[in-house]
Image (tube, rainbow, N blue to C red; front, top):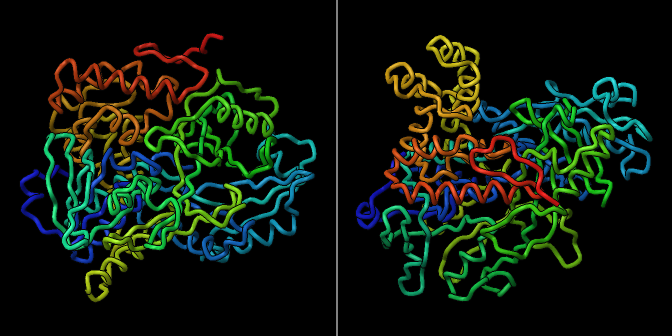
Length: 560
């Protein structure tokens, strides 16, 4: 991928401009491009910088939504789960889950079995992955550290883990390869109106420093929790859409979800769990991570009315999740000292009728048209991104007066998702001299695109230099030249996920990493120091109760 020039943006009349580079906008841009529509995708920060890198990192049917009778949503999500397992095999991994039953829980064994039977059948994969009901002895044989008191058993079923940021990024790359123009670090500051109708957007490019008017036949708003803010561009009224104004407005109800990360050596768990929180009886889930070394626990689900651009966990969020951990595995006795990291994000939920709790707010997506003709999509979930994109582009084609066209988006792998044997790719990398731990991380991140990094390793000796945290010069170059990485945050959080899975967020090697990245991006010394300082602050605020310092290795407990 390469950034378009301001001149090329001025000179092009696009069919569609898609505002928002999360998974919904990325999937919409890809779908549109594959239908032959000239498309621009614009993201104010980085691709996946909002909700799409801060989810529970699951491709799942949403078993807990059966409790609120959202059968259609669950069935759709299960079908989409199976689709994504085929289209993004390098980023999706089927894992077993235990839905634990304790005395006093609202579920009965019979009711859970019925729900899991629906889950099996609706997925279409019941011949390969059927659930089983386990008694307490069978549960403890599988997970001996679990709380045994009042344990009634569990349902063993399957769902899938993913790297949400990389899934979004590979969807953007697939859109680019299909002919879409993609642009991150560029803010839409206004709409271009012709006789009251949106016919483009004004874009302030943070990289070039230029502002440009981009013309398009149709504008789409896929900005998730920022949907109402983007809708305010139609009326000039801040927060338009937070109340139903009768003109296509949405009432969003964003909720905050927090996760924490623990080392498996501190919290011994091999199977993902669904169980009840000891604080409020909500369903929560500790999940062994894809790297095999950590367990992450989520999620909180609380109404949020703060700064949409600055969502961080607080000590109460972390303690809530530590209580979950210590209830599940009483011998662990984990505290904030054991927390490797955390993250917080917002769910862009469409508000239900008054009195509905946060956890019971429906997850379906909604598409509306505003007073300037801008089409907005809100709600939904990561797993359903392809069907959401289809519905949005169907609506766009209708608005364009265009006959609905077929798209191959729901049958074509995302970037890196071409069918390859990961074991063969791993051997190719190791045979080329790539250290096996680095080779494994490449295969997990890049799938069939790993060959690009192997080629650089073979042909460019300078690309082989390791700069810490499992990164090589070649991988950083790949992030810049092929994945539009423009900041230290882009690299550490979304291109490599090092931010999430190390106690210091990679700060121990940040000078070397920033030196290589800055050299590629043309940073001067002051810019490099500013980037490091911003990233250091981000790491610190996602480790409440701990202090983290640049170059300091493992984070230390905070005083007091």
